[in-house]
Length: 261
Image 1 (cartoon, one colour):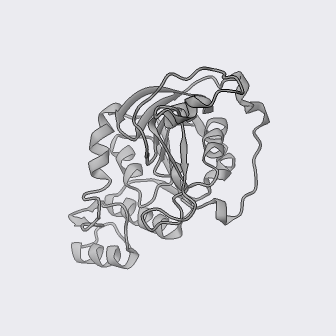
Image 2 (tube, rainbow, N blue to C red; image 1 turned 60 degrees about the vertical axis):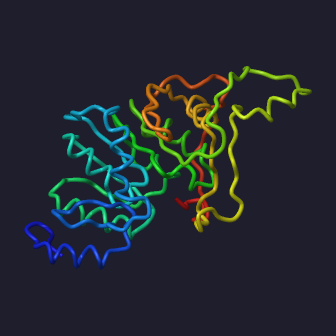
Image 3 (cartoon, helix red, strand yellow; image 1 turned 90 degrees about the vertical axis):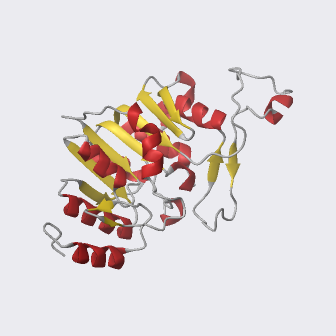
């Protein structure tokens, strides 16, 4: 379908053909997911943290990892980002995103690419969005490491589903081998492993608690600037801790069982 100049009826037919949609996007009066189980999603979440990002992205480049139907890529273009690249592993999501961008007349590049292949982009971006992806990965910390090593140039927006305690305890840099009690404290960083499925989704693998989200970001080399929403962190690329073994990170080949998002 040639989207520019299409009627509402034509847009609605194409939206139905490309469905189901996870991102509810207003395409010139045609909503893509009006019956979303989370409501007007992800607009509802976006409104909770949009103030934490620059209102004007003129001249900036943006990478949207796990772009889905393209909602956040489009929002970055609305803020006049010079270059926006959205990547996903799912062809249906990419078809949706390309269609939405055409309807709204935004120049956005969408590519099929695994988060584990970020080195293939050979480019650093001023702003990287890593939202709704982390907990769908079997190797989530590797993904954060690759973001740091290959694509993060300045800012990172990180979002993950979180479960467990919202407490954040002070954690020492080291503990003796005999220490056990600290691991039972609610505010100690921990990841919950989902062996089978959660919310009927077999690609839900890891849910960090709040303390763990913060610790993971620090460990990967990101400095947390803001926490404007329960699950969202605005971070700046910083210096990786010397002890994290960053110099030993290598690109790896993973089969599709590791690419679920």
